[in-house]
Length: 346
Image (cartoon, rainbow, N blue to C red; front, side, top):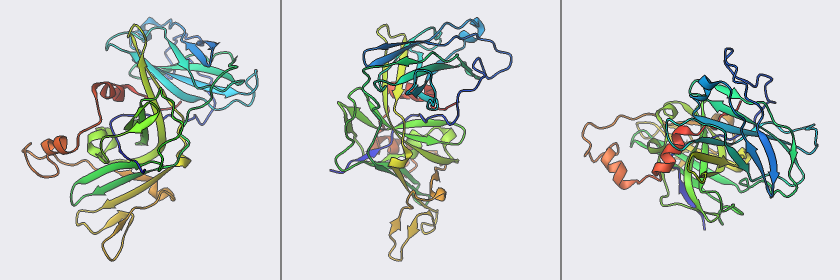
């Protein structure tokens, strides 16, 4: 049975890094010397536990808002021929205003027999600072990757004559296969050239993708920085969020996207209702989306639209009508995650 799912709120990209870690691991601003040592790594069961090192620079520490965990792998104990660094997760304080002290992050998706090295990237609201990278540790009983391996299609429909701008997703006929039960969301990665974030498409429950609506309006899920700019699709990811036992930290984990598995079909119609900027218009008035097979179709733009002065206006721009007719997936936890998640790479 074919599943069509709505796009929801948030953020993430979670791409493998294109280059090896820079030699400058202590910061991106020349004046900072945080002295952050490499995280401690320990193979435990099917996981690798990554524990961050203390930050010596108290001034920087007091401003840290979140940290990202980066990983690389190798089949050799000396790290030769290692993979690029990959952003695999994020940690932030559960309470605003709290300081992000030392934490432990469980990397549950490693391969048995492989060697892994990690580093931590901190953000203080202005710039990133990196820890040194850890020694190589081997895991002998890992369960491997839990990445999405099925093909799917995302549709963007923009009609300026009716002020309709929607996103939807068509999943495999039998749904995604072999999803781990720990994941709670399916996300679409979008980039506006300056930042890349995952936006929730549907919930994942007991390894099954679920949804309550077929289509979601783009203006409900995209922040202002993602409007009036070309957006590039970066793939689909599984997303998991949890807290530690003391509820001091919020943890986020995501899978590695594979853009080759995702097709983008985009259709944009001008204000007069006949000019098609992306896609084709046949003689009988049938609109056909442009397939994601050419570079010119890899991007689409969601324009900002004016809000009516009367909130009870029955037009398609009515805030009241939008909230009543098209309920959002977002809950309070997801809203918070949206504002914090950083899926950018080095």
